Image (cartoon, rainbow, N blue to C red; front, side, top):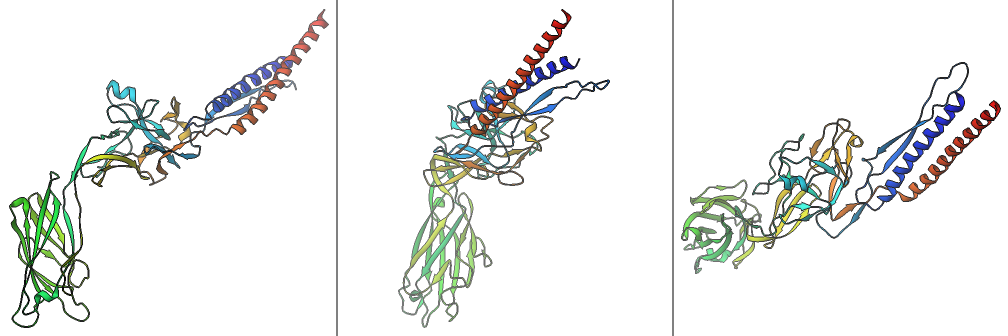
Length: 433
């Protein structure tokens, strides 16, 4: 019984070390595979109760585990849609073949890195057939609220390089100096015209014409102006008229003192903004708060449009796409405008090592991994998204070669025990003779 248990234990040792060698060979074979997570083998002794003071060898059992929570280092690339996760979390992907089949919603798989490029349909896919998933943004670049504990709402991230986009103008900031000398007695009092371009709801260029007319007094200085706003989209109709009074005190000279609405939308002194109705809807115009040196001022003898800015943009073609650290996919157009088109969340689980490992460095949540949750990258327990980067293999070749030498020695030793047991059994047979 003792001799046969020795033989069984040695055979178990051979099998265990063969399993370890298989894991080592897999790790070394994937030492250059981006995103690969190494497999580790651990041994557990098997104990059998012996009777009558005799000892029975139980042998050993090998257990393998893929260390999904231990990633490799990041390396820079030149592709803006090469993505990697720095820290905790996984990128949601789906098999392109399932998407092409169109058999319902594809299964969400998880990965830590990928070199994504557009396919014929504009989807971001890898060469191995994985499609990046994300939440689509609204036309205004806002990502709506989606479920965080399920894959509902995730769709393939699609980049339409021929896409046209234009943003309507909703706000204009005016920084203009009016000549104080024009409000003095005897001045010519010529109106000052300032055309301001804006973009309507269809991306067309229109103009708000601001006319500043000074009030010339009989004597002294009035410091008064009338600002008239006209909209080219409405046949140059007047959309607002305002009486402007400027301060001439020692401490606040040249700043707005008071604004009186003659027609059009109201002026809010707390924000310095007035609301006018252009053809496409309401528009805010910031002329500055009373007492503020920004916005409209009245100094010296020159009419100077110092700073004019607006939001919105003309219609333009998409020229590039980038992903920021929070997973937002931004499209840049040739007009200089940038708009958010998707958000890629990061998926986290209580036990990443409990997931089921699949081909192409992908993983599937399981009962052992626990329920998943979709986080905004950089929030909660997750790390952030890194563009222009790939994650290297987690394999340390030097360590694997060392483990291979140890495994070879252990395997040879177990084989030697089998040989010794065979010789002992042969001796027993000789005794019988």
